[in-house]
Length: 216
Image 1: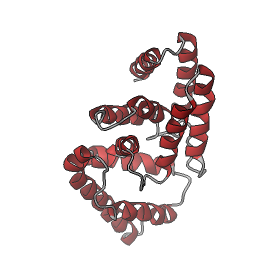
Image 2: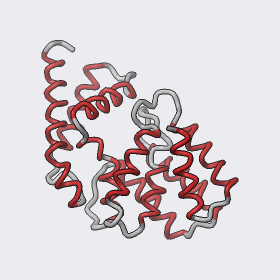
Image 3: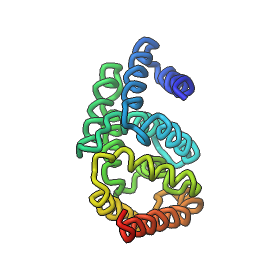
Image 4: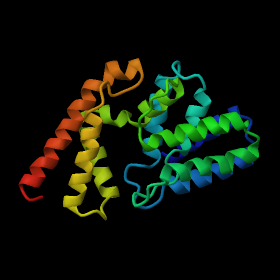
């Protein structure tokens, strides 16, 4: 996984004329961050999956490079106890990219794309945002077994939260997602994924309610 993702990062960096030494240094920081203990879901597997989905939606984006970079950095800072992960991740991206001569406009685009993952909602008709959000939440339309593994991984990341409290919080998240219609922003993801999303969310919600009824 790491070697595959390293090559993927270095290829992107080379296409942007990022010096090899700088690209290697950034990779080491990315690998260290995404490899931190406690990252059962928000790790390089998630980034790989999100990038793969984004590539399928590439024609929708107007600045696919910005989307790719935003996906690489959007979870680089992740502590489930904090509420400013996205802001910290955006700041991280700016810190490493600005010295490389990235235009300010693209930096602002990248940061905005990272920040929108805090709520996963947008009222702005921005194709880059649509691709970013659909790629980030693509796991929700995964086959049942893959979705269930994701749900378990999220619970592991929140292992410090007592079961009853977790069930209340997770139920609220699931119900908020279920209220979205359509769920995805791009036509391609809506056609292939909306039905699966709602089925997955309802199944997890039912499992949470069953655990609550049975006294966990």
